[in-house]
Image (cartoon, rainbow, N blue to C red):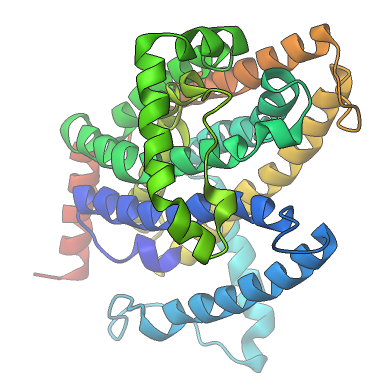
Length: 384
């Protein structure tokens, strides 16, 4: 994270840079949802335990190879003439920890950064709390508790979300940021995502989906999709990927995909804009506290907060499911439980996104101020 913050000093280029990084990161989320499909496929693995064990090895090897590449190839800024650099050795471990805690104290007193952390905590963890709810709604509400009936639709929903985030939302958010500023882009994206979450009530309604499938438009879309998979099915079977094929004979829940372009603005804008603004905050910290710069400290604290919130979100999500009476071990859930499940899936991320937009409303590190800070730092350092 620290390397990303220091790669450029240009206000708008930081957003483009973080947007590109976020786009590449979405590739993982296009692939990961299909792991569950592969693991549960009896043609691939005799048992799910065997599937988990074998797939974990493959994923582990890929992570080790890709994970070491940044250490070999990523380049940081030239620090040869940087003042106040700390010597790192076994003799300086004690003083290094002392300096670290002092830096954490300074970072925690940075009000713009604390707003970024709070907004991220709200948006990301509001999404994480209900992350599994869409799967449960598809299986238990739309397909009456049948995982076989739901098929690969949960995986398709997650994959389409990642694709639209990478190739639609992030470029749009980057453009909005360049025109109206990063804070305004975040507020606009949060409001758009709130509309998307609200539309899920209609998008995930099985009655409306059935009605749409009976229209001429729905039937034409189903026929077109079926023709496409009929065309590629022989190739997929040769690759032992028949699980990828969509069966349109029972209709396609098209409407559940319609809110995705809007609700994807939540996470799609979050790390693109927040990481870009954190880089601006690093400049503000240097202005107020001098050298050494603290990109690494800012990155560590920011992502520690994200991971802490992620853990809390999993716990809170479990409490919410228990409170509404959801039992994943049952094939059928009560009608009241399913209504409450759908409402919580909408209400929680909508509420957290709204609070996050309110938190960022008075964020005052604007483009004009960021450029003034940059000019002052260049002057202070004696740079051209």
